[in-house]
Every structure is written in structure tokens, then in C-alpha cells.
Amino acid sequence: METNSTMASADPISRFIESWGAMGAFWGVNTSVARIHALLLVTDRPWTLDDIVERLQMSKGNASMSLKELRSWKVVRREIRPGDRREYYHCEPSAWQMLFSIARERKRREFDPLVQSVRTTLAEAENQPQGIALERLRGMEEMLATLDRLAERVLKSEDQARSVIGFLLGRG
Image (cartoon, rainbow, N blue to C red; front, side):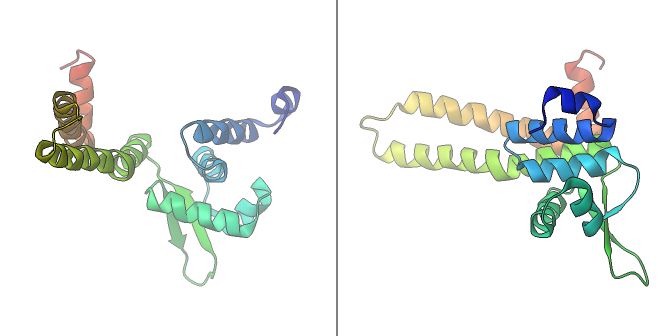
């Protein structure tokens, strides 16, 4: 990890990459994934795998797997150019679209299984109520179902999300 004095002397792109990488780790995202995302986010050109490997000083395998992960989140796109065997990668240009893609994917990967687990546990607990805090579990299921409906509505479309956000901010 770079020291503060090294970071202060680094160019703005390098500082952003390292900051985004640290933030990614805080949010449970692999640091390499976050650093590649930062590079593609903060620069205005497509990058090849070899360019990314050289710029970020990481292995080709790590970069390749990280790009695959970023593509699964729909925040990075692959471009193939006619007559060129290399693949080029660039970031989703819309910050809002990127936010929605990440939120949808996190909901699908993290929140939806939690909702299903609570529902399954509640259904099983109602058949065997001994020792289970049924009312608390019902309250949890109701709260999660409400959040699920809200997330579905907000994440349905960018226009819908902006409308809900405007309402929540008192603009609507």
C-alpha cells in the first residue's frame, strides 16, 4: 500500500484508482476489480487487457477475471473491433445507469437470498413454533417484503428511480 506522501505525489488518475480500490474493499468488492473499474471509470478511452495489466501492475489472469466480474455487474463493456484480435474494455458511460446496475445485481445476489431465507424459516417455524420468536420473524418478513417492493420499484427504470428519489428529497 502506498504511503500518504507517495499518494500525494501520484497523478490524479493513480490517486483515484487507489481510493476507489480501497473503497471497493470496504464494500466487499475485490480490490483488483475495484481498481480496474476505477481505471475505466476515470479515463476516456477503451483499454485492452494488456494495457490494463501494464498500467495497474497486476497479473493477466487477475485482470481477466476482474473484467469478467465487472461485465457480470454490467458496469464494463467489451468491444471487439473489426480486423483487431484484441478486446477493448470501457466503462458504462452513465453514472446513474452504473449505480442501477450495481444496485440490481447486489439486490439479486445479496438481498433476494436473505428475503427467501426469512420466508423459508418463517414457513417452517409456523409448523414448529416452539422456541421461535414468530412475531419477530413475521415483522422481519414484513419489513423485508416492504424493502423488496421499494427496491423493485426504484430499480425498475432510471425514470422511476429519479421520480422516487425526487419524492424522497421533497421535490415531487
